[in-house]
Amino acid sequence: MRIVLTGGGTGGHIYPALAIGREVERREPASELLYIGTKRGLESRIVPERGVRFESIDITGIRRSLSLENLRTALRFVRGVRRAKSLLREFRPDAVVGTGGYVCGPVVYAAAKLGIPTLLHEQNVVPGLTNKFLSRYADAVAVSFADSKPHFARVKSVEYAGNPCATAILGGDPTRGYASLGLAPGTRFVLIVGGSRGAQTLNRAAAEAAAQLGGLPDVHFVFASGERYYEELQAEVGRISDPSVATRLHVKPYISNMAEVLAATSLVVGRAGASFIAEFAALGVPAIYVPSPNVTNNHQQANAESVVRVGGGMMILERELSGAKLYEAVADIMGDEARRVEMAEAAKSIGMPEAAGVIYEQLQRIVRR
Image 1 (cartoon, rainbow, N blue to C red):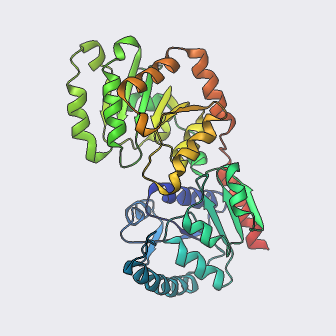
Image 2 (cartoon, rainbow, N blue to C red; image 1 turned 135 degrees about the vertical axis):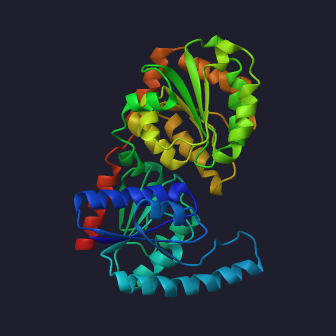
Image 3 (cartoon, one colour; image 1 turned 90 degrees about the vertical axis):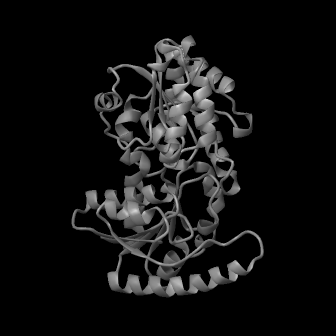
């Protein structure tokens, strides 16, 4: 198949698109992919690094308040549709897959107007503005959470598929995960990760919690701080004077082998982005979620609540977050192995490791139709 992928702005849109592309290539090695994004988004760096052809259009998001900038955005949308149509006519795709972010707007719209089959993937429980708008033009929608289906009631083909990042995370070797962190196999550790860019509030609370690790003598903390917070977090952790605790704290700016590290992880403390949740659930890793309040429609809280309801995790709202509260939550889980295992099994019960394959089959159906 020839597939156009589009989605951008954050890793939460980019990585699912690439995971779908990988599944298409795995099923059909002769397939060709084209990714359409923006030059300003992370996709302009991440996609070429993965060996996928990348083209860009100029587009910005709509502001929620009346402003002159929205008029400029409307003009960019029109130009973006024109540019997208040109790219689509040249590439001649069998289908276009949009995973969210404002760049999807002109690309999926252009595809629909050219009669090219289109599929949207919605990562979050509460759909973003772009996918809501595009759903009226899409041939099919795949959702990560069953709770999302009512939002797309007017779409003919809506499938609860899960998040394709769940498929991509499988197969990590825990032995290599331990080795990459300098830990002995079997070491119990908590992974604190605030997303690809890090989360300062979460880092600070986790550093305060780490100072109390004397109460959990066999547990390590591994921080994935984010590049911009690395030095600050290292300094905070460095102020912990208890040597029995300090030797169990490990600060990394970024973890590139996340599949291997997650395969070895006992518990995660992190944000509630849809791709992260999909990965944790697919591997059966329990989590303490601290949803970011700085996202559209507060969708991370809704994501976390869907896991908490089945018993696969806990949630602490950022406004209630403190080092003491976080340590108490970690100690409750890590101090009770039966409970931790029960949470892990509950998380795995909603994991959908076959998600990429389900979306591939859905793509096949709309192409044949």
